[in-house]
Image (tube, rainbow, N blue to C red; front, side):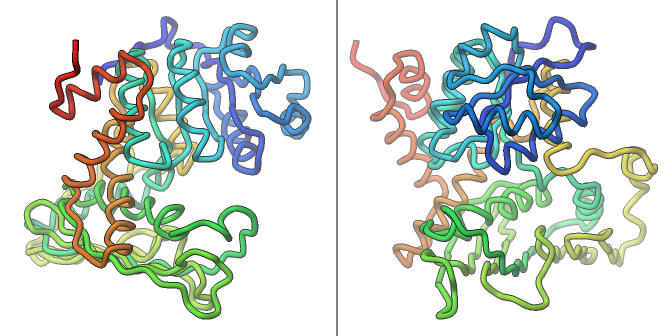
Length: 374
């Protein structure tokens, strides 16, 4: 989807941050480090927390507000970074988009696929860019792994083992489907990126070990079918201490000409029985500054605002990653194999039924093949 670009592609982008929590402070760090961004204000329902967060980065003089559109008018902001809790992503991003502001939103783009489809409609109707920060796509090593996988010929299977034991406290301890909903989307999205294919269906089981400190299921195993018959297996746990994997998990991808592995931290290892896979692209081979994690998300967002390209995690493209999560949850709840097409069809109908804006309803009806009454 095309989007508006900035009139001046050279000066720093004037950005409002929404959300003053722990992740919001991480984003303040990324924004202040970037020579291409300028923080002009912070929005939060707790104005005291917003002022305190700005003060930690020497920005205590900047204005705060509880309204995105109001602060945008005061500051002449050009874009928004949305780091609110997931349930607030839709109202905050929608308000910003229709105030004429492109949005970079923390993952998940929305709590449900239906809500994400509404946001995709809002981006289309407003003509503004809405991109999610799938920050774990932004690693030099994952780019190297993708390059290696392309040389393996026809692919057969891929797998991710994820094992961590974090004691977060707070909302995660009480979440339903905590591993699938809050963490697995990173691996699911990376699988789409590495395999360069779309998911077709999934069978998933989730469970909660007896010692788990989470209320929701902290462990899950899922088998995804991708196009061309490729299988992707995810096995993860958020309550397994000892010999933990990287936060990126441990990866293995097999094809007709060999296998690629990645421990999630170092460089990938590719064994190609057909010979060399080709030289790495210059931006990977050279020792240049390569922005990673949220720094990489921010760099891609700003680049897209300047040159008009559609980033890989623009809202429409990201919906399939969220649908993988929703399908896995549905499979775990029903004990059945779930087709991604069925999840998307139902989500479009749910989004259409809930949508209040006529312009977005028209877009949703078009995509759902529904004719609205005159």
